[in-house]
Image (spheres, rainbow, N blue to C red):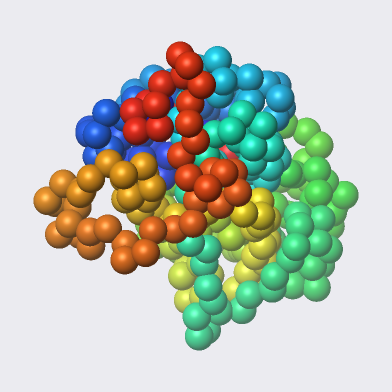
Length: 293
């Protein structure tokens, strides 16, 4: 079966590696990266870089390349591609699975302030502090560009462009980050507010602990929803189990059974799957064979 994975996230690379290693018998994997990072970490298997030209372009690609399953493993905040993926999957008659790492939850001692958007997050800042550690990426800095009275430390993988706040220092770095490292950043730059998206996962979570330990407020931008009707799994291993069960590909390898085995009840593949793996047209493969942020 041909599996197309959208996304250059850690989870997307891990899933590509599992498929390439034979966790799903007979799977061929293609990973699609948006091309927004100058030097992305490439996953195993085939890789394409660049956009599809919207939902119609993605649907055409799915048909042309006989894709049997589309996996949306993009960043939790890559909302546009997720809805394009849902529209394309429905148009092409290809099942869609969303892989989303679980979001973060506050614990005792946290001082969280939730926001529904970057603009809303920016509006909260003047009442919380003056020296802001902005960890929301380089693409949304325009929301903060008007706040000339605040100072921002902006951390991103690649250098941000404009518009951006006038008083900005850029810290180029890539996770995973350590707790000691995050504490050092907060101290060195005298940070009094942290701003983050609810990306989830462990790679960037230490900043939340560091902020809690320092008694700092944290503005957390809520993630957008997954499109209605799309089944969701929390990680790469769960995705491979879902694929094996949904496509009737037999029992998982022994090492996977030791880690928890198949779920008791397979997830509902949702309306994009049209009741299960579709019959492929002639020349299009078969349901049990063929893959920012």
